[in-house]
Image (cartoon, rainbow, N blue to C red; front, side):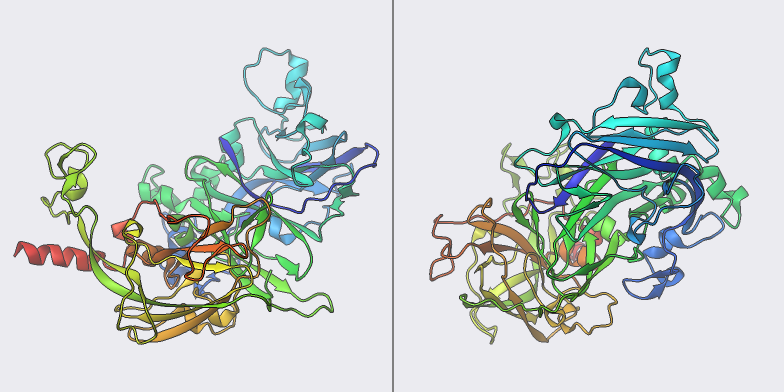
Amino acid sequence: MKCHLCLLFLLSSGAEGKRSRERVYYVGIIEDSWDYAPSGKNLLNGKDVENDEHASVFLERGPQRVGSVYKKAMFRQYTDATYSSLAPRPAFLGFLGPVLRAEVDDIIVVHLKNFASRNYSMHPHGVFYEKNAEGALYPDGTSKMLKKDDSVPPGGSYTYRWEVRPEFAPTDDDANCLTWVYHSHVDAPMDIASGLIGALLTCKKGAVVDSARNDVDQDVFLMFNVVDENLSWYLEDNIQNCSDPSGVDQEDPDFKESNLMHAINGYMFGNLPGIELCQHRAVAWHLFGMGNEVDIHSAFFHGNTLLDRGHRTDVLTEGKWLLTCQVNDHLQAGMQAFYVVKPCDSEASSTEMGGGVVRNYYLAAKKVLWNYAPSGKDLINDVSLTEADSASEIFFGEEGGRIGGVYQKVIYKEYTDDTFTTMKPQDLHLGMLGPVLRAEEGDTLRVTFMNLADRNYSIQPHGLHYDKHSQGSSYEDGVNKPGSHVAPGQNFTYTWQVLEGPSSSDTPCIPYLYYSATDPAKDTNSGLVGPLLVCKKGTLGENGTQLTWDIPKSSGPGVSDPNCISYAYYSTVDFIRVLH
């Protein structure tokens, strides 16, 4: 079981002088039903779950399908030792446990009461504990008295004491608070899959007042996780939600797939509630993941940029925006949520920034036949790509109904002007990538896009600011976004602003991507993706190239899935036509 602290977006100002203290929490373990999509809809497109191609796989109840509601165990905070009143909590926490916060030298005291039907525990990361407060069951050779913390029985209680020692705390170069997790560790994979996990913050002196931060307006905690309900202790109970539970084969691959819930805090397909932020106020984002090899996530905040450990990452602009995992499989399976940025102060919203220039680009989406290895050889080993039993033959051979190495793709091509008659030469190393778009802090990028292909496409940038009119992705937010679906033969002009450049910790230019987001998974696998460089002022010459390097290189390593492209059918047809 691995914990991936994917991203941590925080401010970095220190404070000294607060005295140590005990921070006491009353936490209960409860069992309850959890709905991954309480609206009954894919809120990204407004479709009912049963009418949505992707959401129905996971959320539609059927003879051998659980649907969206699962029994889970969850940590919940109570106001006092009577465990009679639940403490208030942000709606966006979902099934996560309460956030535990403490400063350097503080003691975290957790009074745990188990209201569930099986043994559980509480095991922390990022703090110091004695053996009697570890909360992890394994053969460690300890005595019976030191094992009580490892497994709290139903109806039982236990008190854990954890110390935030200086060696575990944020350093001078760290943000004010570090993000950790706690979880049950009787059988960690099954306990976590059942729902028993939460966030823990260890902070510098003076960063926490009572139970909240004093250096930011809000903390937002998001766990990106493919929740494997097949591992849950409650799988048998959940199978009873199927309309024909006796017919369920637990080893059936489709049944197993339907129980892989691609969730953010336990919500899917835009159903995560309650992330409402104030424009012009600091927000700390704490993003983490827990799971196996599939739980490597790439978070994308549409419309805004943030700082990650002093480095500029993805971009707060007023409006309702999308937050997604950019791993294609996770994106399609519903690992997406909304966040709302509102004007809370009298200060007017502004996206104007002087001192920059307008940089014009003319891009077209164009269909091509792309050869992944035009030499026909494995140039590393100097052998034919179709040599029998070679590692390359499986990809480039054309026997047994295989396509070989030539696929129909659609890629971005750059032209000299808006007549789209003269194509600009492109650096050979870019391959199928679109041209490099370059801009400095304060600049405006004006991209005229012509769709010369045969289906709707768009251009969606990372790292830039734009209004809804110039957004290249489409979702249900009540705003018309013409740039999200440019029809064949039509053109559209996007206007994007570079309000933030690289931070003081960054290199002179930082790379982002642009891509078509009409159908992000299919569009990018079809070939519509390119590099975008955002640079500090004075970095680019008159011709738009970097002054620091003669030839800036851009590359996009990745696995292109031909089965997830808009032209898979056409590539197959071309192959059959050649055979005839």
